[in-house]
Structure formats: structure tokens, C-alpha cells
Length: 188
Image (cartoon, rainbow, N blue to C red; front, side):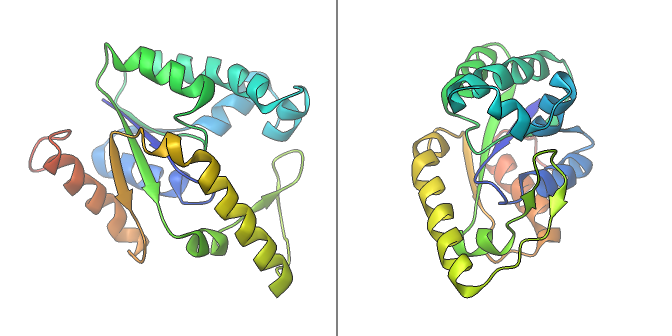
């Protein structure tokens, strides 16, 4: 079985994905890391090679296709566009003949803002001091991103709110929801 996590940037797909994979005894895969490894470039450098984000997503979709072709139980941390554009085409094609579930993780925009991380062009983390004015600007950006991708999040097989839930409790909550929805067997 493959569980494909989607949601806004900085919602916690990678952190929660790792924890969920460990809880289930699955392999964890971060799509961004796999794209960078495959093309031997940072995400920002790959994006800059394309006139539009659509071109970049087509290229990254090739990597997602490869990952979904694997026959292993895994949790994949996708991108904010995880069920939109080229990613959705790849996902739908594999869903026809595979035990594959998309899971949308969501939280408030304010909570996501508190987890924002910034990277340089080579995907190295950088510090970005947050003045009140910057917080307002970034909050507007987070809300705009959410609104832009919302229709793709609605496509997810399972939706899980992580608002105000301790990080350590989230994998258990996800497992319980997946059992309730008959995705996972009882007792997992």
C-alpha cells in the first residue's frame, strides 16, 4: 500500500510522513528529495529552468511516476500541488491498479505560518527574521496558496485535520481514521 500525503507547504507532510511510515513499518519517501536526487539539482534551480511551473511539475511528475511504480509499502510526502496538474494525472493512472490512497493533511493558515521554513537556491535552510509586517505578508501568501490548491485537496481520499493536535499523536490519529475508512485493517 502507498499513502500519498498532500497539503500546504510547511503543514508537516515530511515530519508526519516519517512518523507515520515508522508507525506502520513502511518506507518513507520525500518527493522533493527524490526529484532533487533524480535531476541532481535543487528544486529552485529546476524550477528556474522552466518558463512556467507547469513545465517543472511535468518533470517532477516523472519522478512521482517512478515512485508509484515501486511495489513497496510506503508513505510519500508530496507537494502542495500533489493532486493537481501532472501529479494528479500520474496519481490517477496508478490508482487504477494499485492500493494507493491520498491523504490531505490540513491545519490553520496561522499554524502553518508558525512552521514556515525558508531555503536558498540550493535548498539549504536559511534564517528569515519575521517582523509583524512580514508575518502579515506571509500569512496572506499562505492563504493565497491554500485557496489556489484547495480544489486539489478536495480530491484526496482521506482528509485529516492536525489543528492543535500534539505532533506525537498525529500518526495514531491518521491510523485510526484509515481503519475507520477501511483503508487499514483493525488493530494497526
